[in-house]
Length: 325
Ligand SMILES: O=C(O)C(=O)C[C@H](O)[C@H](O)CO
Image (cartoon, rainbow, N blue to C red; front, side, top):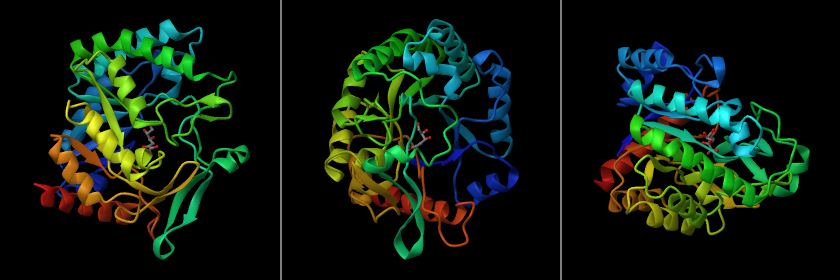
């Protein structure tokens, strides 16, 4: 297991030096700023991104999230679905040819949702929070797209995800890319009448079954999202037990929350629902040996760029990995 620098969309020498000084050798980009002509990423652009990371001493280990406009009709079963599936296949081939091993994805038509971006946390730090009773007031996260006009049922979303896997897993297998599903955050049954389906450890196991055991599928195990599921720490333990022993965890978002749906708030590592040391030992026990990242961190005093909070989380995770060895 190794900690990588994550949730960046650009990398400059300063941030690369910060990562190297933290002893980090890998990075995860979330929706990298690449040309999107034709609803696809080109090999040349992905290869150039990987080359820029390598020139700064960092390995591009994960790209997480295609632009929403690349696959909205794939999620919704819209008229451009086939065209988008063909373009995503090209993008997966480009990612594989460029030597990037993992493409994270989510299947949330209404994306990540928060009702508060500055909830008070330990020592006056600020964290994001979700309260189902407040969703009518809108999403506080600036979502890179409009919510879908039509309301999608859970059955329809499952069927659309099955089609996504059926069409793209063979391409990913040939390209040497692993598609890694992020659970639905928040893990509630629906928001604004739109279903959310990857909301329990059993739902993630159902997606695994739908993958047919393909080596090109896995889970981006976001522990904070799973911890927000009913059961909290027990849901985290269950998800790792269901997915870990058969190697279905591709990488990990190692963060936590306080509380569970319908209302939770994000938290410093060690200040949330689960015991991070016990979870790291469980990941080791089930044989997970991949990258993990801190994902979301609180906003600490004077830390507008979150670098202090990320350094705290990264150091914490590195120590847990060493202790679990
Ligand atoms: O919601 C989370 O936990 C996330 O990590 C949000 C990220 O944007 C993730 O890529 C959603 O797929």
